[in-house]
Image (cartoon, rainbow, N blue to C red; front, side, top):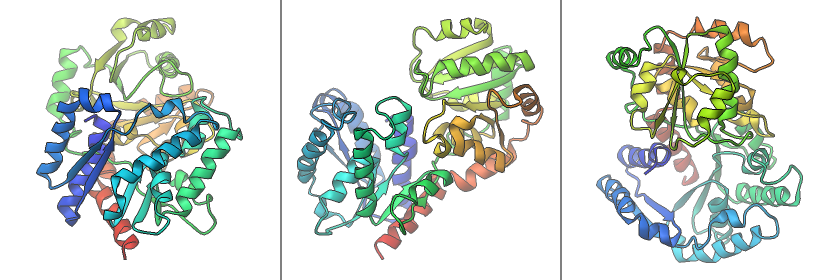
Length: 393
């Protein structure tokens, strides 16, 4: 029931069911102890889906976490072999179409469909072989990387459709197999949940002595890994931004506040009264409304140009201007092309660009309109429905 799953899966399924009347079953595969310990939350999800006429099936088939197998070409075939057997218990032949999120289920579902019992959709979400080079799990061109590329090609070749989440990702995915092109469906967001509220903005800023501050918000997971969403990158940006505009305040909305976050910020000369950590996203709309901009910056990797990020979509839904960098290349290109933010790299006229950004971040209406037309659940539902209907003739 995380924000990501509710926003990107559950809300979409509800919308598809309501708008198009499809018979939908959501299949979840859990570790056995998770299915036991989280029974109440799983039942909560089951009840919520049932109210919308959607079935939920739970299978305790994840005997060991996949991370023990997926990072080495010698153990990866064991994982895929086990899942090929395990997925037979799902009786997939009863469905007309199977929409799989990410690489592992898409490959297994396609592999089990040699007799073409059903149609397959490979919803890539990201370019996994390149993404895991970025996070240091394997190297570009290594045996493990090549094996993942083989699985990727098989899943694309044996699916009736495959989906990318950014234009840049689509352009790269189109090259996996000659003549077979990906569909583009942007990441989505519940617009109502993130609605901007002027009265809440004024109240929160007054309560927290932020009336004269330029407030930048970050939301999402955060850690210490230099290659991914990490506190180090944001501390560096904050330090440089303060040189340009001293009256700054950062709000970090994270699932977990880790020991060591404060020391990283302190190391970069950021005092404790210049930022705030908020745990969980229950107050995300409140803090978005109080903020002036959102930020998403990442380290570079082989798939940097294809990255977009749910947080960018969430910022725009509330009307926030967005600070990005080339490490989030697709998002940076999008916000620049649509005039809703800046690409701000550390070595590229940083002071001049950030000064311009601060002075051009006021109008929320345009960003909300763009988010509503491109990133709403309703918009994504219509795109998925067109793909389903094309695939099913």
